[in-house]
Image 1 (cartoon, rainbow, N blue to C red):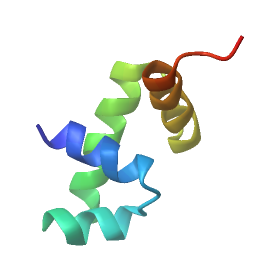
Image 2 (cartoon, helix red, strand yellow):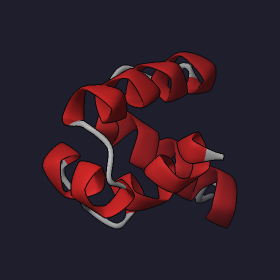
Image 3 (cartoon, rainbow, N blue to C red):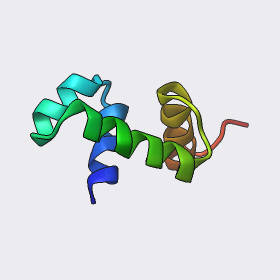
Image 4 (cartoon, rainbow, N blue to C red):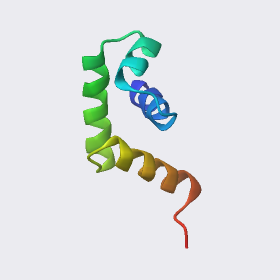
Length: 62
């Protein structure tokens, strides 16, 4: 699924243009997927998305 690929590329630190080039899609398409990912994840930024993904994968500290 594209959203999983894009989330993984965001987690790896790629920019929108880098993701678009990697997946051979337009930056607009990447942004549309990111909006969908943010909505489904309940976040509003890449930073929040990365934190959320890391917390889910590694567990919250404490």
